[in-house]
Length: 468
Image (cartoon, rainbow, N blue to C red):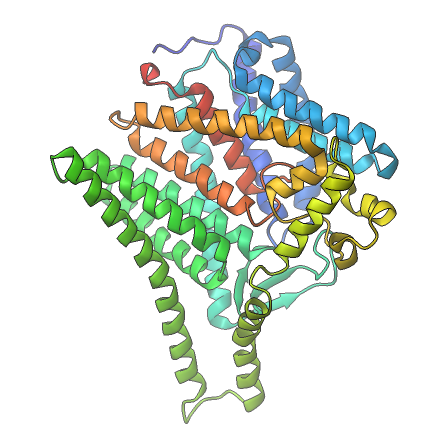
């Protein structure tokens, strides 16, 4: 397909501003989830700058609405946003500022990342995607190198309570987990799984040997961060994505010519790869613990008995947390979400007003009593925030998007973009996995959400075999 050239100077400016906005939007989320830049002048400057640019881009889309609205996904996302607006309107007495702020962030994600321009080809978005992937991957590599340095020098820090982190900003190696530079090791680990998928894609397209070596080394660094983050959310994502990507790559390569035997072999080997990935996590952690024990107990060790005990306690604290509550309070939060839904089943409470609503109507609800401000699951957040209207519209969008994404993947498995499609589907599944255990993708601006909505828009709206 031949890309239609933009005709006016305004269109050309929009083209450049669109990429700048996406990089700025991703930067805000990246720095907001970095323990050393969260709430600093960096985000203070970036937020109004990005918001102003978002307003200009949205105005352009409104004036050229025919090029952005002639697909069912726009209307599905619009219906979900309308449901959010109704929830905020019906719950204005519990707070309006938070709802407006949330509306601004989700508006940017849905209307400026997800919704694409019908005048532009898949190849145009692929070029833009490589720029964004390169920026994202570069940050993750640097962040994880620093995080692993923290592990080996046993660095840790904690600040006083900072909203929304009631326990303060933690960094380094704490409580038996490698937080590193991230404000949340689960978010950092899921971000890293996405980075590994991006590396796999880049390995398939770069030509120089040194580039491939650098990318492979980055995968090792990123994998080590996931191991020491001890994020069970990331481990689940790895199991699913390793199985899927291995199966699809084998399906393309066809190591066995007979289709039925190739299917069996591909499934079998994919499961082995998945199990190996998970087992290696335990193996690496065990090896590190043994090496650390040897270092601590050497005759010439410089560690005092008190220091040795502190290091041992760090590992034990994580095991104690998991053994006392395998869900780490999530089951209680999900039950609390159901209670809120039953109390406000049609329009919900709006996302920003969970605490205020529970304080007045459900003072014994676990979310309010425990001091949490969200339910740590995307679907339970929607259930409580927007009620049945929000759940129905979102599940409709999810079902149609999922079917379309799989359809477009199958159509392009034999094209030059097969690896990109596999990586994009893996990214979507990784993000969805993370959103099952954290409040991500829908209401909160995280790096995972930014990548998710941008990739989803490309794979479901722009991706057709005849365009390639």
